[in-house]
Image (cartoon, rainbow, N blue to C red; front, side):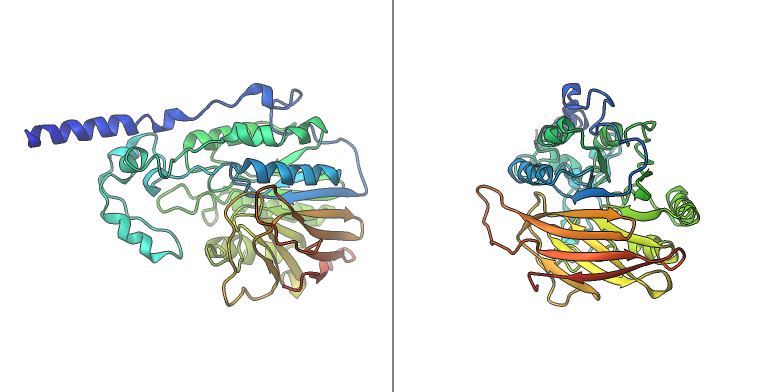
Length: 398
């Protein structure tokens, strides 16, 4: 009897798990901007000399924190918002790529998380995707709510105020093919054709600045590599930066996975550092590099073009569980602030960038009462061909 019931039980398990990709809620059209049909209202037309830009990332379905961040941003009246990814907190079933349901019949999969060797012990668990979807689904659901509709509800005040949003896709936004497609659909830049789910990178020119948004993927073993060396995204990035240099546009790069980080739970990503920074950004006059993923605030200063300093700012404190710093920080780390919800406010003008990292108090969360701002920095745009210079001061002294 046992030998007969085992195949039946496994078939039932797999049939249940196979429903996983179909359990994503549809995006509600009423939450999208009525003009663009996307998450952002239209970008303003015409030249502008100065812009105020807010930057934040990693809301991850934390409604209270996200709405507090949005309210604080709204009070600053920005012209543009940059979102550094992880709008949702979805997980990969069995820590496997989404192969449209085929992952559920894979009996063994090597479990690997960069920097966490102990995870490899979980490789002994058979049919990891099916087990996760069913037996472990209650404890760690692959698709917890709120989903993208929750993000859209939280950011409704930005659309109502007519403030456009440019977004990079985070790893949690890309673990499931349905999420990838929906993210591309609603977060493609307003006024441009919809981007393909496997080609979510773009640039937008505003006020003498070029904003370049990159796709760093999931950084998960076996998943799609959005940045193969010599591939379309990196070729495109080199081309767009070269054009910006020729046109005199100042470049700001937004991506999710950071090339540098002092985080204890997550570090900077080596292949992003090598392929994006060392092979491309270091050869161009990039004013600022912005990222999320690390649930904290950090600013790292390192040499770029002709040895001139470039600020790498991480703002991933909008909702995810907080990260701690390593005992030995990243070389060039000017400041690391843990345990504080935050966003960054940038003042862009002909002379350069003035940046402030601002703390946000969330009802019901522990409040460390940090100084405000928790960090300040300046990027001075030198004469053409000389690249940006930078300075910084950290009121918190951390």
